[in-house]
Image (cartoon, rainbow, N blue to C red; front, side, top):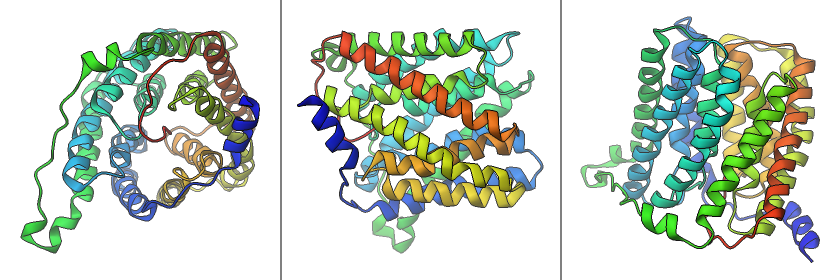
Length: 346
């Protein structure tokens, strides 16, 4: 019965839910910061701006005041993750340091997400931001540049989220900052077990990928986080299957895009189109969204630091399978009594 439910979930198509509004906000939030940096000749800073722009993805189903409040908190968390990553990037061999610290970021991010009731829930974006920025070549000045660029992108995302106030004075609403419930989140049934799962899943998958000298071990860690998202075991296993199947199909979409190798402003436009397409379908079917998420993630990496296409696609698939498998095994080996979360993770 569980296997049948997972298979059925792979094909399920959810409601539209006003996704076009989220897609438009996300597209503009990504377009402007990246285009400014590319035109300024600072493509190496684009990862910091991209992760700040992820602020626009939070609170998609909330009213403007609640959405803005959630985005303020999430934006601060994303900027902290980017800054910590930039600090780690200064160490001589950051690859091994990323693994345990990334696991801790996942656990803290998961608890923070529960305490603030983020949507999308979970620490995926925080882990992604920290691990990528920790692997990007950095200098001492980067520790100042990274938070400045990221926070600037966060502020722009917040402005885009409030563009509706231009329709009239009565449209303005002060951001409604959510009150955190850390104690309640930590005391929820199965919460401590789930935090431990994050530490183990990311630690194990990251350590294996790093030991094998794969070039992007954080992809395995991000895949492991994805499997741990969802309200129950069946939904989590379904998301793991979505991640693997969607990534495999997404690589077929990414290959011609990467071989085309758009540069500069053209690359930014491709990224924006992929971001918009992602937001249009991510709430409806995660596997379909990965047709766009996969080339999107790879294009963002290529924009800042180009790499050979063949090994890049291979690593993306292998590390995704590794992370999803580790996460699924841990789920099956540990009891699953955690309370339901809201919505879907990325």
